[in-house]
Image 1 (tube, rainbow, N blue to C red):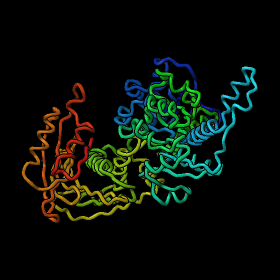
Image 2 (image 1 turned 30 degrees about the horizontal axis):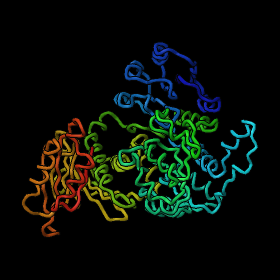
Image 3 (image 1 turned 90 degrees about the horizontal axis):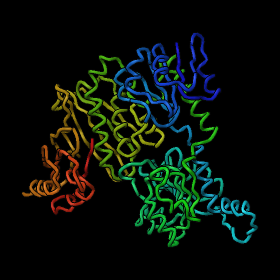
Image 4 (image 1 turned 90 degrees about the vertical axis):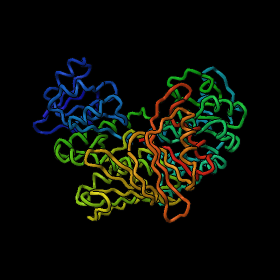
Length: 535
């Protein structure tokens, strides 16, 4: 068995791959043609970020079973092409969490005690002792926006410094927070109470510029901001203005939007400690990423164990063809309840009806969780393979059950999302031709195609609702593909509507359901609530 390592790995990682009858080809600096030739008889390919694994490279590697990226992302790997070939794609998620957390603490300490500025002064031959008085971080309140892997590592280190730690993360259970000694609060409360705020969120449409001028105005005066996550989380111009006015006391930034910055006003400010996206750049992190990747490849090639896969788990071709529409259905249903989620997720209930009762619910349940988490977390790295582990890590209970009763369809998947704000309940089915249908929303029977963009509305059952919504969408050049209405028989005068729309982006955001369009829909007097669902 041959393993090709296209980019450098530490020697400790190579030791995991030394097995009888295995050949390790770790030559560096190959041209694309040389790599393609060397892969013709290879079972595994390990890369970092330098090597681009294209469809052509994959198609020309007939024996390839696994592609492993020694890092957290897989942007340089054509994952769909690998999946089509049945090749497992792995990465090393979370292996650099400690390094990033330590860097966040370093930025925080550098603001509390102006070490960078004092060092620069000394190197300039100055002795300005009185100029660089600092402050302790002991007894200060640290607000963590996001309590995932890195946030949890920061929390532990902050406790060691005697800080009080609060956090905002709607997708972490109260039990996990309690175990960490962290108080969960709303984002507004966190901003009002925190002396330091450290960001640990993915870059999503919903998190872009989550810290803007309005958010900074709600913060405790003199707060200091740390960002080692994504540059898009902060409106850089608004942060610079807030620092200049004194509303924000300073910032420690490792990430920017774009990178490198095109406007250097913010990193050049004396109240800002800036680094060039190096939080994960440590010897230990690189070694751990390499070792974790190599061990995962070894276990897969030896025993068929799949860890840290970013594409679909291994199933036979026949089984995959049979389950494929239901796996997509499961993911869509999870995505719908995830995008409709309000409150902290406590559990996910999944029930399989009819023929699905005897299928591999492990795969289907994981696909539901994948949909839920892709709606609320960064899509990268969330797959059916690791979705259950993410749920367990976040203290989210998964309850699966099955019934051979066919209901109105041969097979049906029912998903309930249990949150601190209540439940969301959807059901769906797959027709014989492979088309998917949403057949129930929050207990109300509807039938809508599961594809593209949906608008789900809760409204009073009265004349003119369809017309008002249609007129509004028409004004914004958004085409309606179908409009399904169902009456809530347990609530007199209540109804649920599902609108399938064709989004065709034009100038000035015309042709798509923007946040402004959604707000206008919600403002229609007959509309009680509304959600934009993108599948």
